[in-house]
Image 1 (cartoon, rainbow, N blue to C red):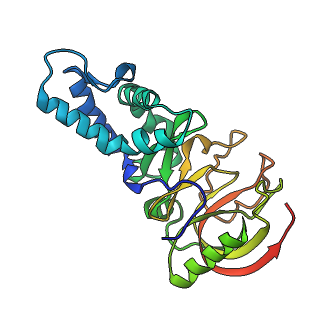
Image 2 (cartoon, rainbow, N blue to C red; image 1 turned 90 degrees about the horizontal axis):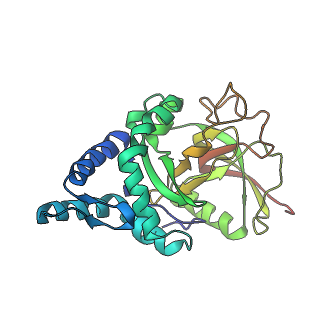
Length: 266
């Protein structure tokens, strides 16, 4: 497995909006029979409590939120089990029913995309998987080669070279326009490469890598300064212009060929 910077998210955590709504209908039904996550407590709150309902309830929570309740709670000091259970309560009762209204406008077919929720900056935030469905919806193809740049370290460069030589496909964050210097001192190599673009954004987009090699982007960053454009590049020809955030544009892409490596001072 190719090592990547940061924490790898399991692709099994991602579901379509239809799958999330189906889960929430089931949990609402169980909530009507006394089972919920209110008060940061997982279980039956109103007697009598049916044992089969209890088994179904705990099984669903484990199936859909195991990573958040275990891996993420263990990893982040500020995230507690109660935080996650409170999120589940709000998600079932409110948040899931707003997702189509809030985010459906950004995509050609929201129903076919997959989403998950991970801890970030004090909250459980939504992420959309940048898989083949996403790329095809926006660009009509899963093959979109483009000349890009990427800051990396010596070890990072070796991993990218090894992955290209072995035919291992995993996506990295890259750019073509940068208004502000990069922020990691150890990333002192500027890589120019041909990458197969999975997604393009006018400004920086927080993303996580998944165990499939694809990345997922934070949906709180889909907007962009002004009223005329979103942060999403719906075609790749006009995404290299002015960056209104004074940061950098961002492409999520699979490295295909390395063109140049330049040592720089950060």
